[in-house]
Image (cartoon, rainbow, N blue to C red):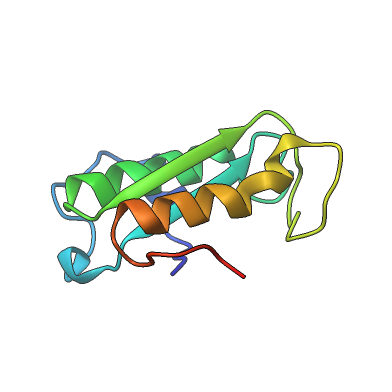
Length: 101
């Protein structure tokens, strides 16, 4: 679930609950490269803080390189190993018990 509002929140004082219903947001895994030329890394940081403040189970990983829309393809950048991170996280929060096929 991705909301485009974090850029606006980043530039204004934080509120206790930025959006009604946030406690019902599902657990969220955030992944971003600092070299993303489309979405500023601060947007993800603000989103992470808002999720944590709302009590939403959240995990975030930032990588120095990787650009935007790296997807599932393997590259030289470590960010392309993110699928293993998601698998571990899903096991940790009890969403899956086995490995991803």
